[in-house]
Image (cartoon, rainbow, N blue to C red):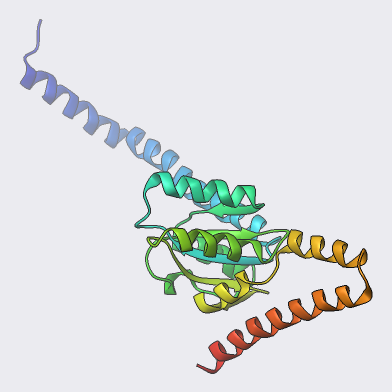
Length: 206
């Protein structure tokens, strides 16, 4: 006996009710629910693992950037040895809190990417500042240095210090020069460091 569209629809509806009454549908939902929760837990765990090795963080707003440019930023970060991450503020917030980092991502405006420096604490700031210089749609909204929050102004100041590779190159060059050359390298780095520390001090007093 053939069933019309109405009969078929009604039969499916009755079957769904039977599934619900027998608990089959309920069990299926229960089985799927932990999966979403597990994904979130895995994301937080992965972020914590990276943050445990992080020397610095930079938060950069990318909402107005075209997808093509976002991918370019991701490549620049990878090239510079920096981890590029985009995560929900709630998940990132849990990860930074459990990692002992003193910042609340919810206080930062809009959506943003997190650039994480593992080997070089200056690299994230340099990459973000250089990219922002050529892309007005991207803005630096803050960062973290030594586990403490810093503002965009301090991130910019930090970006002007020599990075790990640059510093090593200068040191190698100074070793092949008179002692005065080595002293000049140290003096230049100290001046840059004083600038950053001054910016941090101004931020705390504000």
